[in-house]
Length: 388
Image (cartoon, rainbow, N blue to C red; front, side, top):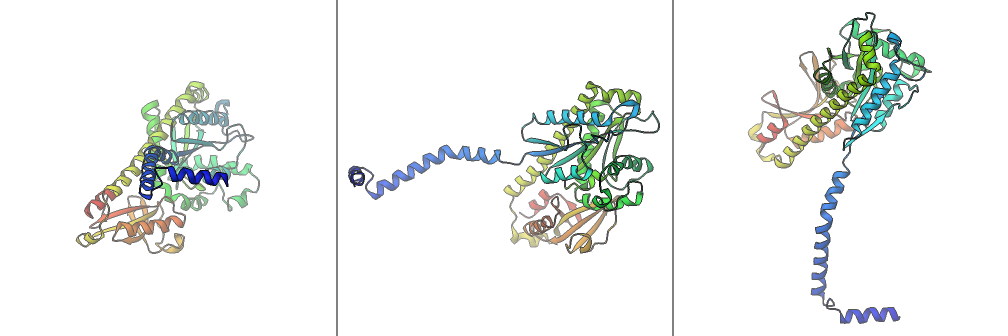
């Protein structure tokens, strides 16, 4: 009772007892709070943006030594390079690194992919050292998942895939996949098709870094059936850092200097790929913010259409729903040796975005919208400009 009476006395003597003055006081108080809080809110929003997450996979490990060219251990060299790459990337803001192994242990191939999938990685990079029957072979190469075009590429994939024989119950884990059967590779391809373009872009960035920064022999970006890449749900690259069977290159890769140089080249390439990827996303985002679609003027651009690209492959598949998780209608377009597969056709960008959400809900998380004007593919930014 005493406290209540004191509170009533305070209000009766307070200049804010009048409703108008009280509302003014509250308004000023809210404005002041907003003035100080808004910058913090923006900082918090940007701080919560998802970092660029890289999974580094050091090939082999434990009882799997990898190739032993010139007496070296592929598993040790791959791990050292992976850890050095990670140490450099972790110094950069906005980048997070996860390792499939950070010590000398054996990890199943499918578990390496599972690690990347569980954290929703933006890029998966598997580090290896090559070997060949001729000691003259040298140079660094990069691979993405695909059908091997020659015997050499098949042999590289066969060597890496044979690791599954060291795993328990490998027949069940990999659905009867046989590393020694070239036809088995075909079953690997479909899952990674969605990410093929981005995988090639990442691999090319790494390959060019080897050539431009280290002056290594350019063995180019190749496709082959690597089972470790098959089960990942993101752009994925396998790097053969060089040949241990070449005495000069083997000594280079086994040295601290050589491992540092390879790590520098790969980490720089990963950051370049990240920057290119984010610049592209930011450009499209800014376009959408500054140039909103006006539905009412679409009739003047009736030959402008949008589609959702969900996959790209060297295989010609029937454009039917059973090949694409039930999505229909599907259209197919050949570009060089590649076939690209599209879901739906829309007259507005907003409608295309709805189709994109449907494709992503079916598991095509890297699907994206493309635009056509009079049957010719154009940039999304150009399409949105035409819709103004």
